[in-house]
Image 1 (cartoon, rainbow, N blue to C red):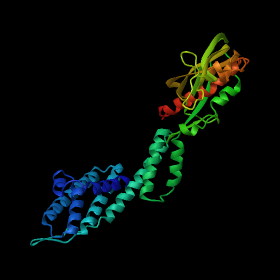
Image 2: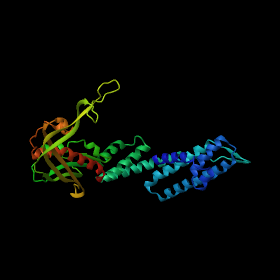
Image 3: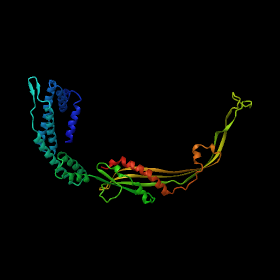
Image 4: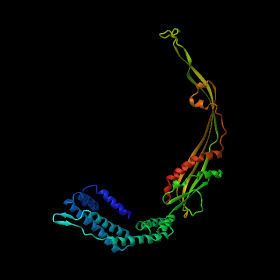
Amino acid sequence: MIRLIAFIFAALILTSCGSSKKLYQHGRYDQAIHKCVKKLRGNPENTKEMNILEKSYNAANDINNSRIKFLKTDGKPETWNEVFNNYSMLKDRQQLVRTVLPLKNGNKIIDFPQIDYDREIVDAKKNAAEYFYVHAKKLLSYNDRFKAREAYFEFKKVKEYYETYQDVDKYIEDARNAGITTVLLQFDNNTIIKLPQEFGLQLLDFNTAQLNSEWVNYSNKNMNYNYNNLVKINLKTIDISPEKLKEKESVQTKLIQDGTEVKLDQNNNVVKDSLGNPIRVPRMVTVSCKVFEVLQQKAAHLDGAIEYYDLPSKNQITMKPLASDFFFENRAITANGDLRALDTETAKLVGKTPVPFPNDIQMIMGATDIFKKVMVDLLRENKYVIK
């Protein structure tokens, strides 16, 4: 039914492209008919359009009638939907041309015979609905989620024909539920470091709805369902660098203005302005400051993979590498001398003192947010791996 509506809509759009004669010559009969009808409504005496309309109408009807005859002779129950569509096209076409009939072309009267297609349409509709209903129930009985999805769409077709048809709404819901692929997210620590429980909990604590698609639902909590797939966040390696402490001593100098002084000429005489007042100029001096810097550094590297498994077979579907880095750095600076000599960045750090290094677990937990962001991005990018 939807395809039929889409076809008619496309025909209406395409009538605006090209002449009716060109459309007819290219076998686009329904588009030609729409074009002719539109022109004949404006000029009922346009004999050229009458001729094209007659040829296109008969050609289009021949195609539909021939197809219906073949399908009925073939006798396959799954073709009733196509039979229904062909009869519907015949009826819609007839109703369209009726708006400009009868037409007078010289001494010839063009008035296509009006055929009642309603009985055939109703019969085809009933047969199509019955076929889809019975076939969908059969598909659902296989207890296969992919066949359940086929059943879902066939039950939906039944509902397109009849809003209420036996217990189709219940079967639509059943097929929908049976067709869902359930996916469990799981964290596995395969490193030599024993991690606190909150690491895994924090890692998987995000809205899994962003990973869902039409037929796939992800869960980060094991609800004891019979999950179809497992996505394992496998942490394989944790590298923690040694604590690094670097000390550096340097001197910063800068030429700055330090008040003003009287301007002297080359003979050391005071230079005056036109009013006899001494001219004063900035007094520039070079200042310096000794800087003592302590740089503390430590790094953590996490390496692993996102592994996709089919649970019934326990086969791995695919694997995506996953890694992140986390850095701790602290600069502590003391200064001795004229602080005006310091650059802006150094001046901001003056007085900052060394701090205790974070321990290894703190470094790992600090890396969690970065690792989690990379993980979620990868899960989102690859969510269609599971069907």
